Structures are given as C-alpha cells and as structure tokens.
Length: 441
Image 1 (cartoon, rainbow, N blue to C red):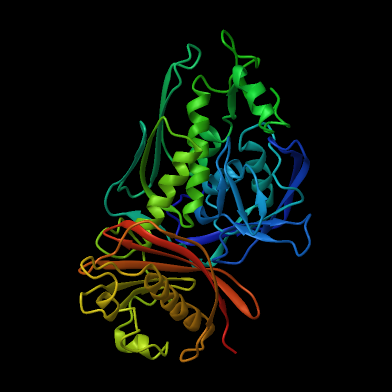
Image 2 (cartoon, rainbow, N blue to C red):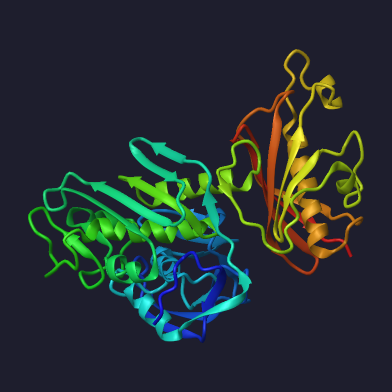
C-alpha cells in the first residue's frame, strides 16, 4: 500500500464495505462494526443498525456524553461507547469520510489496540475523492490546564503528538513519546499499542459496570509487582497507547488538525475539554481565533448588515446580528456589538446594565436562521422557533462587549431542524443552547 501523508489535499474514503466482529470492552456485548464508504464532507458517522430507524451519531465533540475509561458519544438518548480506538485508525490512515455501522452500543475491542481496525480498513482500500481536504492549521498556541493535567498546541505544518505519563508505579515509571503522525508511523509505532489498567482498579471498574468484556487478551494488566501479560509490544507501550487515545479524541474536532500537541498526564476527560477549547477558538473568527482554515469552494467569508436583512426579516431595534464573519455549509459565525443605547438596557437593570439572557438566545437564533435559510435556499422566509434546550448562561454581557457567536446544524428533518449555538465575549463562553426550528415551506 502507498501511504498517504496527512497533508494530502483530497478527501478520502474506503473503496468497499468491510466488517470486524468481537466483544465490547465495557459492555461485553457481541458486536460487529461494518465500515462503509461515505461521500465527501460526511466525516465520521456512527450508525446503530440494531435500533429502529438506524439512528446516526456524528463523531463530534458536541456529542460526547461520557469519558469514564473511554470516550462515549451520543444523541437523543442513543449512545456509542469507546469510539477512540476506531477513530484513531481513521486519523492515522488519513480517512476522512466513513460510515461506521454498529449492531450494538459499542464497537468490538479487538486486542485493545487499533491494529484490528487498521487491518480491515487496509483490506477495504483507501481512495481519494473529488473534494479538497479542509484542514485546520494553528496560527497561535492553545493551552488547557486543569489540576496539573496539561495540553498545549503549537503551530506546525504537520500533526505531531507528544505525550508524557507518570503514574508513580515502579513498572511504568515516567514515559515520554513524540511522533509525527503519518500512516506508516501510525501503523508501526502507535496502532499496535494496547489499552491498559491496574489490577487494583479491576474490581472497582467491574462494580461500576465497566470492562465486562475486558481480559488480558485485550488489555495490558499491571499488578503491584508484575505485568500479567506475557510480553509488551513496546518497552513504552503505555505512553504509545496514550498517543493513540489522543489521536482518536482529536477526530472529535471535526476537521484534521495541523499542529504540535503536547499532553502531560492527561486522559480522555482532558482530551475532550482540550478539543472543546480548540473548537471554540477555531469556530469564533474574532480576536481570539487560533486556527486558520483554508478556503473551500462555496464558503462565504462574511455578510454585511444590508445583506443580512435580505435573508431574514428582522429590523431595528430587533435585528441582533451586526455582521456574519463566516458562513459555511452547515455552520455560521457572527458578531453583535453591545452598546448602552440598546433599548432593553433602559429597564434591565437600572444602575447595572446587563444584557438579558433571552436576548442573547434571540441573537443566536437569528444567526441560526440565516444559516438555515441560506442552506435551504429560502432567503426572505422565516423559520419559526419551536424550542430551546440545554440553555446555559455562564457569563454576564455588558455594554461595550462584542459577542462572538457560532451556530451549527445538528440535524435537519422534513419539517424541522435543530441547531447548536454558542456566544462568547473575549473568548470566554457566555451562553450556549440548542434551538429547534420549524422549517419554512
């Protein structure tokens, strides 16, 4: 096979369907995953074939529901557990678009590494598609720190992952590994590294309903004085598996990342929070933008206030979008400049002017309406608000602030759709919510 560098400019998928069967690590359920070719711009989408209507869950950080001993994604009550080893295989091989059909709620664990998935994906073959590959290249550093767990991203022309682990166990010591990620390196140096756990944690994990399918056949088990498995695949297999986990979790960003990522004593929870931070700084094209996106055909790089009024019917004083900074196929970014002359400040609140949270939600909804109407080609119509879910107000907004907003399509049905939105001030999350619309006819 000819290895593809991650800098390849065309999107990729697999040539034909291929399957792999086994048991789930945490559920112990017998399960089969079938990888199917997918069209350009699909990304990685899991499909629960065991459920009515075959619900789909896109591999996206917004869909992460749990990070206990693995990464779980879900939507509308439907979940897929332990997706990171599968995702690492896609990232390591440079596969952009694929459907992962699973007949249970967890992919098979295989031998605890990504090698089983690499082998079947190579068997299927990888093909280029007629669409340019969109990549995020860091323009400045991004730092996440929480109680001694640190992840840092630095600009680079390629993806480099570095990891340090230190468990205070005599059989592990301190391990560090740094590798530039490309298919040949991934297959040889990272994919074979197996997941691991400590023997003294096994009973606790079982009591929590986890590792029902775990054994020394699919995990390295570390006792107090010895490793229970016969042999390690690498002297530093443990830190290599952490590289594998990190690579898989980075897929949740939704776009291949170019940069040097350094992780210190991290894990799935920290990985996911770091990806959220990358997502926030990537999506908001304002002062704190950290990633630069190459343009693709069809992107709109901004809409003026006059152009906005050609799309939605809102007018002063209730037009709450000053400018759209970027409009993509399924996501939109815009700004609202908050001034003391806003009419709602006359009564909210005298002596302490604070922008009402419902007005922020309205601004996010207007931004989402622009996205929906452009996506459907129904400019001038009006999608009607049906509901607001998961609304959280995390930071007050005052006169003089500039609100940087993002909205993205979660799903679209025949008569309604759902958007996810965020509003930030100086890069700090102020408001987030999911909004459901009735679609215009």
